[in-house]
Image 1 (cartoon, rainbow, N blue to C red):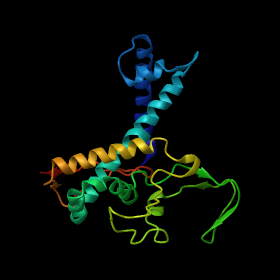
Image 2: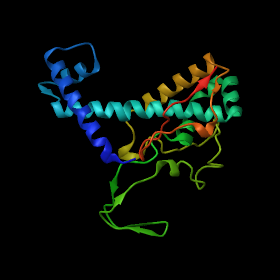
Image 3: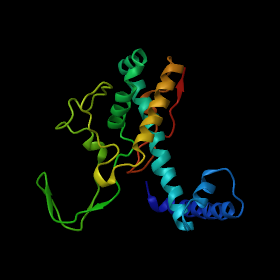
Image 4: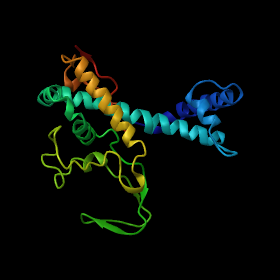
Amino acid sequence: MNYFVLIPTIMRFMGYMKKLIKERRAHPKDDLVTALVQAKDGSDKLSGDEVLAMIFLLLVAGHETTVNLIGSGSLALLEHPDQLEKLCCEPEIIKPTIEELLRFVCPVEMATERYAREDITIAGTTIPRGELVLAVIGSANRDANYFDNPDTLNITRENNKHLAFGLGAHYCLGAPLSRLEGQIAISTLVRRMPNLRLSIPSDQIRWRGGIILRGLEALPVSF
């Protein structure tokens, strides 16, 4: 994807959000933007730019990633009917199921940019101080040094220390909520639609472009 093509769209969206923020300051409503505009700690309030940044964070990190988990996770289960049947028969294993789907489909495929603080050699390759580093989380989650049969979907996998939510200082603040949303959505889908199936061949599924997030354009199903 050519990200320069997206710049005009992003700028138009920012312009729209700035107008909306201004509108909510003048005329509050019962919505999230109003809650952000009115949030305060003593006399300290979020600036317009801070509200705008928070909205972007909620849309991308708090919404799109979980949507990708639910959509891509559902596809993975449909492509592995033995695992789907196991979940249908044992709904109590929904928690390890979500952990395995996080590892297997990896909604955030690549970390945002990092920069080496010092020269470091990894697997025989030296990364000089100050160089840009893009860590591929999807690859780490399929590392055969840490996972048995990493390319196999196993919803009862044990010791599943995946990196879908990052690690350390960059660990996702919304991880508990994302896990809960995934558990509710997938378990409800399996319970209410036991005959769910793909309505087109898997190789016709279209994925959205991008190098950071990984998600479906659509998931055509029948039931």
